[in-house]
Amino acid sequence: MTAVAEAPATSSAAQQENGPLFVAKSLHIEYAPESPHLPAIQVVDDVSFRLERGQTLAVVGQSGSGKTTIARAAIGLLPGNGRISSGSVHILGRDVTRYGQNQWRDLRGGTIGFVPQDPLGSLDPLQRVGDQVAETLLVHGRASRRDVRAKVTRLLDRVGIRNPAERARSYPHQLSGGQLQRVLIAIAIAVEPAVLVADEPTSALDVTVQKRILDLLADLQEELGLGILFVTHDLALVREHSDSVLVLNEGRVRESGPASDVLDRPKDAYTVTLMSDAPALSPDKYADRRAGADVSGPSLLDVRNLTKTFPTGRRGKGQPSRVAALDSVSFSVARGTTHALVGESGSGKTTTARIVAGLSTFDSGEVFVDGRPLGTDPRSYRQNARVLQTVQQNPLAAMDPRYTIFDVIEEPLRIAGSGDRARRRSAVRDVLDRVALPSDVLGRRPLEISGGQRQRVVLARALVLAPQILVLDEPTSALDVTVQAQIVDLLVDLQAQLGLTYLFISHDLSLVRQISDTVTVLEHGRLVESGSIAQVFGNPADPYTARLIDAVPGRIPLTA
Image 1: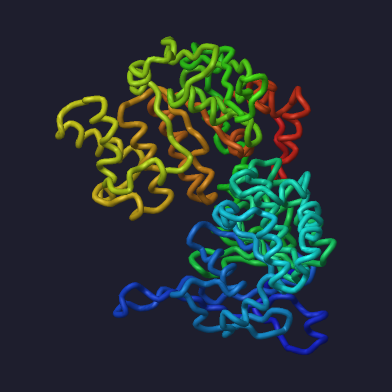
Image 2 (image 1 turned 90 degrees about the vertical axis):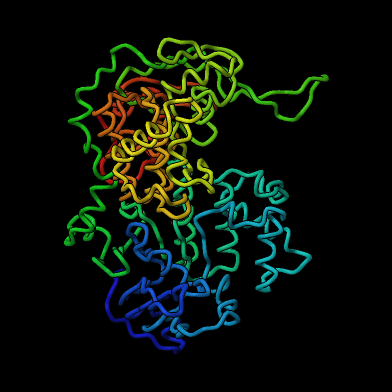
């Protein structure tokens, strides 16, 4: 399948049966500005492509490239201020360019399925998941009230959910991210559509769940003859799961064609940059810098036999039963190195990070930060704040939206009683320079800056007390590959300049291999293996580690 500049589309029965499923021709999409006196903002500029039956077309590019706008236009879900200003969209030979919402409702679910990026935000938290699948079947007349439950169970079983009848009675918050994504796929394929639009369907999932979801889509594609429009920023996934690729930048097509041609022989400099930014496709990017790391040097962080349990809510013999989140976990992090914690969701990575950061208690074991034991006295946490700081996964949730950026960065200094206002202002400006942010952001609020800028702000906030250790909890998982590369470059540079020590938590094993010196693998709170990156990734001793590594997408194998 190839993205092309021209694609004829008719409404004949033959065309609907044998022609392309989806054709976009010279598509221009714009958004109306807030002020009527300003010109419209064009976000998609002269984009053409076609999607054939049983094929996958990947639409790639960094944030703001127009990927999601095209996906939304493909299913008639542009926001109220968005419109197709010129060009055309044909689905199964029908011109849908000027369809109204009533006409789109007949297509959505029946002819077109949609799998959004955020499963938890896309499901009604007050309805059982089975009821939400059932609604699609009932609305499109594919089930009666009498047999809808049986069909829901078969659908959930079809997308690989264990105990489907039981899970159908669950609410969204009771299911894992992977299970929720499968529920959304069940809804999307409930009436066997011809086209499936998948907008970053696996970006928040760990590698093994991601692989299962994409393998599931491939199986369903073969079974149903689906054409899949796959929106992603991950070129490693494109290599393994797409037939063709459309590369976008600032709303324009930079390159298109068969995935193997575009990725193996890129012609455009922008495509080359995207590929160099993808960790799975450039695993040795920081190899020279890591070569000098002394992993056998004195440790700055020691975790010994750490155990943490949580109550399950069930009671037995009068006592609440508990489940082990961490079971005797031990590791050390040498000064000036990066140590990664990896494992599937629920493995205990974030629980460990929260304990080390003093944000959670533990049942037994020992944690030493720069030689000082981490106790239960909150005052010890405040002392450790000058040695250890955390960079959170969601920067927006970590900042008070009412604060200016200056207030956000200055707050740790105020809490620590460090200096007067003038000295604090000077410290804020100094750390702002270190994270390469312009001083004009200081008067803005978190919602007024980009995602990449917000990540730099929380990094500046963590650095303002001049700590020696940073706990990095999925610091780039919500960023596109280009912005992620910028943040990782910054982290690597800061480590070299300041001698920082990193505890790096991530589900992205390609990124872990790229920047880490040592790694600990966790499974259900249990330490599976630990050692150097070359040792663990090049010759995994445990089948669980090997399974994690095998799930990593990309052509380049993760070997030593």
